Image (cartoon, rainbow, N blue to C red):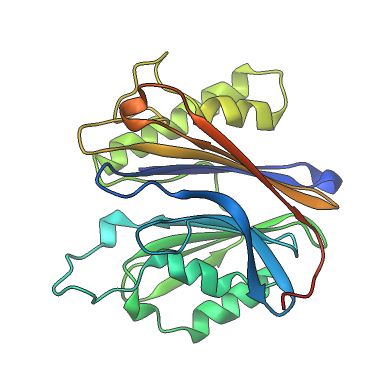
Length: 253
């Protein structure tokens, strides 16, 4: 299960929150750092230590990309190496400056090498926009220019868990007088008062758990990536890392 939300601050920029839930057998991800995407653009992202890609990134053009597994449409891998990591699709798209460029790239790429996925892209130029695509292993739908929060994926009781998380966020937003980003941060840390389950946003079950909580803040002049790495079974202290990327193109040589 992964959970994605966002908040538009109008002229001030936007925030994106992402809980990455993975099997407990995977290697710990590397904290966010700056990478070069080509075309004079750099991007900031954490790195999947297993496959080398990422699930969340933001580039110097102010474009943020997030990818989630589309478990309902996944097929079993018939032979080792049949599929390319979806996280590598993200790094392939990291040099896109606009939502339109992302859409064109998705149409031109051979998506048959990837398992099913949901992809979201956010941009603040010239105004905030969020686009949503879904690839079911055969065809791609989108972009949908009016996606609803939260966006979730789950390999466990998918419909039940997604509905519960949608209801929780609706309740939290309705009950709070605080700013949207504060509510979203609290939402992504929901763990049933320190007793996480498969249904909580910060989840834990026998074979999988939330391993990290990411918060990307895209402002006029810079991008901040705040990253919280969670301990196994959520026992112990989290580790925190931050990375900053200036807005605008820079020579990547």
